Image (cartoon, rainbow, N blue to C red; front, side, top):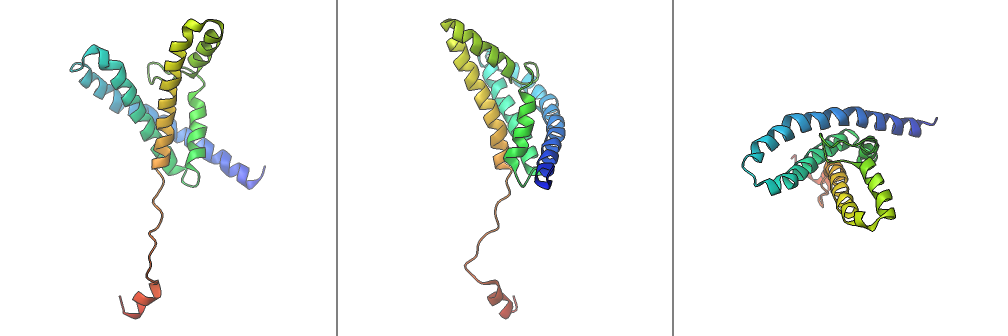
Length: 159
């Protein structure tokens, strides 16, 4: 195994080991209490929308943390973590339901009545995974500012 492959494997492992605690802490210590606090003030028809927005916020924060720690390649780091989210449904924790999406796609191919539900579910999953990747992209450090002034000139003046 080459050193580049080993580095990618370590990056993936680090992002998974960092991502899960970050996700769980955000979901249970921030999202749940906030959702409980807001739920009493909401019209019931808005509950799922607010939950989806909070899920997206939790995933964006998780993506930011993973991306910040996987600095050389934040997209690869967050992609490794995202793969672990596709393995099961997380309905109670988050609205990520990739196995359900696959089953729904199979049902929609057999029966056109499932198309509306499939399109909705694809949209929700796209939003949630997009939030995760957006957080990773936002974690990038700003590049050093370019200057039109040469650094040696300021040294001559004693600055």
